[in-house]
Image (cartoon, rainbow, N blue to C red; front, side):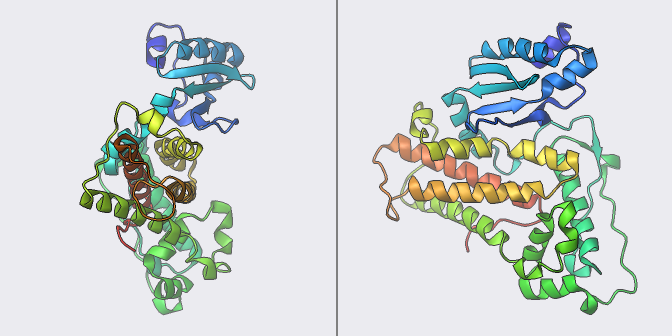
Length: 336
C-alpha cells in the first residue's frame, strides 16, 4: 500500500525501512502495532507528521485485514489487525520453518558476515563479546535482507601469543560449556560488558529455559504425530486461538523479523536473545494453560480444530526459538 502511495506521488518515499518502524502498541493489545513511520515521511516532505498519520490511518482502515487504524502521539500510527490476521501468524511462521526470521527490512544495505568465534580463544570477556556481537550482527542483517559485502565471509584475525589457560573466558567454557558461554555473551547489552567477569557465576541461568521451551515444543509435535494428530490451520483458526495467552503469544511471535532487523540496525544484538527468553516464558505459560495434548493437569478439548490449531501454534513457537538461537550461533535441541 505504501509503495502505491509513493508511486502515485501522494506520499514521498520514507527514509526509514518501513518494516523496521513497527513496535508493540503502548496499549499492550497483542493485535495492535504502532509505527513512527509518519515522522520519517514528514521529515522528508516537510509536512506535519500528525496529518500524515491521519492520512495513513484512513488508508489502513480500508484494508480487509485491519480492524482499526488511528493516529496517536502527534505523529505515531497505531494499527489493530483482525483476529484472523493475528491468528495467521502461526501457520505463516510454521510454514516458513527455519526461514521465519527472514525479511526485506534492511534491503538496500550491506553487511559483512564473520565466522563464529571460539569463545575459549578470547583473551578477555570484552574480546569474546566483541567477536560474538559482530558475528551476530552480520547474520541478523543478512536475515533482514541486507546484501553481503563482497559475497564472502571475512576471517577474524588470529590471536597471537595467547595462552588459553590464562583466559577467564576459557575457564568459563571449560566449566559451563561453549554454548552456555556463547549465549551469555549474546544476551549481554553493550553497557554491561564490564560486568561479565563479575557475573560469570550466572552464566548458566539464561540458555536452559530457551532450549527447554524448544525441546518441549518439538516433543509435543513428535508425540502428536505418534498419536495421529496433525497441526492444521482450519477455517476456525481465529476462534480456536482466541484466549488471552494465545493472543499474546501470537503477537510476540509476529515480531521476530522486526527484532532481528533491529538487532542489526542498532548494533544491539543482545535484544534478540532477550526476546527469545520472552517467547520461551510466554510459550511455557500458554502450554501449561492450553495444552495441545492430553498430558498434564489441564484439560484438552476433543475438537480436532482446536487441537490442530494449538499444534500449529506449537510449531510456530518451535521455529521462532530455533531460528533465533541459530542467529546466536547455537543449535536448538529437540531433546533435553
